[in-house]
Amino acid sequence: MSDGGQIGTVDTGTIIVENLNADFCDEVASMPGGENIRRCFACGTCASGCPVTNIDEEYNSRTIIHEILLGMREEVLKNPVIWFCVMCYRCYARCPQQVNFTDVMKVLRYLAIKHGYAPPDMLSDSDEVDRFAQTVRRDMIKNTIEGRKQIVEEIKARLNQSHDQ
Ligand code: SF4
Ligand code: SF4
Image (cartoon, rainbow, N blue to C red; front, side, top):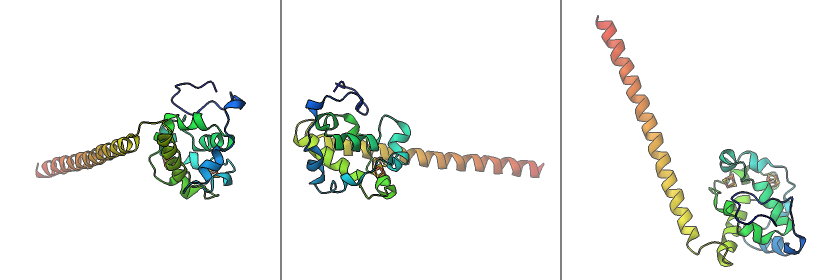
């Protein structure tokens, strides 16, 4: 595999056969949440509704599933993209095969930490990042609403002024 430290999906166009692990798919499928991984027929519906893919096209659930099915264990588990998912379950809701990619992601994260591909604190660290991101989002929405209220009040004040003249 050519991808050493690449941030993004792995280049499946360059596969070194001896690096493949034929048991990887079984490993994922044997864990809670990973049971339906083989049902995937690569339709791509999951990726088309994903908010992360929406901002970073290098993140693609269909590609990650393809890599699991191929047995690209090390490449998948060490790839930072497995931490990009925001666990929103949109992919699961849209999947015609009930693959449950969100829980597949949880399995990958568990395996990545268990086998030393990610720091032991990575789960709590990513939870912390999610909380911070949600706080920023909430504050920005509040500011947007407050800003709109202020604009409406300014327009009303101007209209009242023009009526008084
Ligand atoms: S929507 Fe389901 S079947 Fe289609 S690519 Fe995604 S996981 Fe596979
Ligand atoms: S759960 Fe993850 S992969 Fe699925 S749609 Fe949400 S962000 Fe994308």
